[in-house]
Length: 128
Image (cartoon, rainbow, N blue to C red; front, side):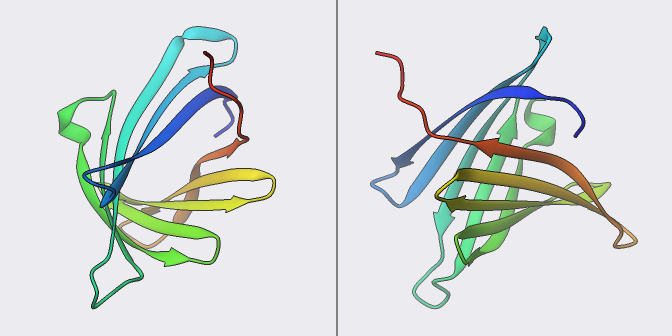
């Protein structure tokens, strides 16, 4: 939050279409050495709970910060949360005509929430 970035996000189906993967790579505008990347996996719920979403988060901070997540389908997208020792990180993904919104909120042990990151993405053609 408070730092403008350029982000490239690519998504594709994996595991015989049972899951999808998102790879994001961002660079702070004005500081090309300030980079961050994440590889995210998402899977749909079972026949018992078709609205459930599960996931796996891994990023350029390394294996110590890799974690699983759980969530649910929501109108226009889905929510998924990842528990870390100090906070729960709630990721809200929404797709509409304007593009993709990805908002991350941190909730501490006392239940206090604070915005952590917000991305607004629009589709572009991939380079040849």
